[in-house]
Each structure stands twice: as structure tokens, then as C-alpha cells.
Image (cartoon, rainbow, N blue to C red; front, side, top):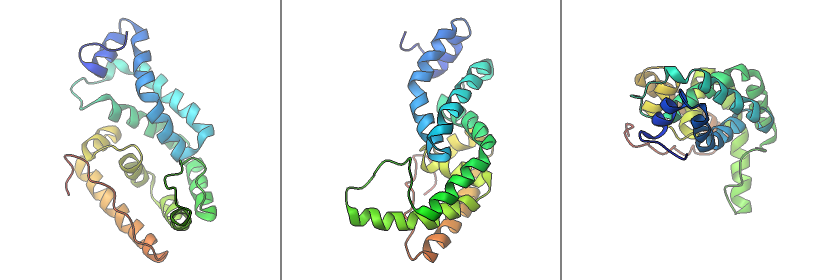
Length: 198
């Protein structure tokens, strides 16, 4: 079985009668959840957090509201709660990144050695700024930047109003601009998602 009518929501509904249907959701969404968690906590914790995210999702699948915009925000919300348990480890990793400027998880996203050197220098100051953010602000920012969720999806994932998402992102952008300015580098603005205010 690869899919049912109703997409992911249909799979969740079907998994109440046939639990193996939930495996399709795992296959479909676990890689992106794992990448997101690995960026936040490192590869060692990503396996455990991803497994716990899907185990929790399976346990509470009867509470999933099929009227939601999609399954991804629901899964990222569960992952965010699991990440909260690893918060100290995440802050330590960000502080290490701030000191070394080397992100052991991120793929090489540029082929130019000059661009890599400039990027690594900027990463140190920005990682330090990320480590100083509150957990709520960091969740909003990283769901936006790393998980590529829109404002409404972030609101659903974290069970907060869209206005709170907007205000947190504004506050974080100001803090990161200050950090980037202190490092003598401009902050690259994140892309605007469809349906998000410009």
C-alpha cells in the first residue's frame, strides 16, 4: 500500500484499523524530520528523536485532526517537543559551532572555497546568537529556515497563534541582524513562503 484517498490524513485514519499504514507516513516524512533534528541536535540524537517523534505520533494518531493543513506541521510539532528535551545538548552544539565555525551536519552548500571561508566566519557569530535565543524563538526560526514551514504551519506545529509566529520571527531577525552586523557581514533574508506576509 503506498497511499489512500485523503493522502497523509487518510493514511492516519486507515492506520487506526491497519497499523501498518502508518509505516507509509514514516517512510515519507522520517527523512526530512531526521535532517531537521540532526541540524539541531547532531546525528547521534537525531535517530532517537526521530524514532520517538514517530512513536509518539503513532500513539496519538487518533487525536490527529484531518482538517489540519497537513501532517508535516503536526509531525514537526511533535519533533519540537522531543527536541525540547534535548535543549541543553542543542545549546552546547550551537556554542561549539560558534567557537569553531564548522557545522558537522550541514552539507557543503557551496563549491567555492572563498565562499566557504566567508560563510564559516559568519556561522560563528550567528551560531552564538542562535544559542542565546529562547527555546520558543529558536523553534520558530528553525522550523521556518530548516524545515521550510510557512507561518501557518509553524503556528500549527507549535500550537501558537500566527501572530506569535510573526512577532517571534521579527524579534529573531533583529537579533540575527545585530549579530551579523557585529561580525561585519550582512544577514541574508530567508525566503518568504506562499501565504506569508512579505
